[in-house]
Length: 143
Image 1 (cartoon, rainbow, N blue to C red):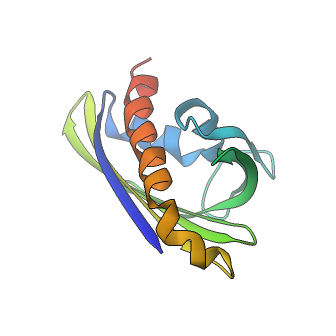
Image 2: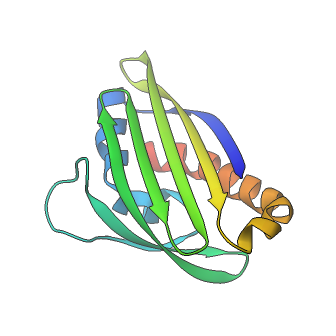
């Protein structure tokens, strides 16, 4: 298992940040590793909504099915899964002012099967992914 967490200042009101990030399809805009992310059903996102996410990790494209499990005024939790990994993304929001929000983004990667053996060697790559998100997401939200 690998856990990462990053805290960043988002230059928008908390409610706007939660609404934007609740639609996981937006990962195409703020996660540099995401190649595509499409909803599996049309309409507004909410608990139970699912997305097909394709990301590049260590030079290879991988598909992960994500679901929004928790949607609260100050928290979002997504789980993503494929045959080699179960990922939990836990986003916690704290208002800093009327126009800015502190976001703590935590991700936990539970590797499955033989992929568990590689987990110790993937730490640096997962940290790099988290650093990239922490760098890009605030800039995207400032637009």
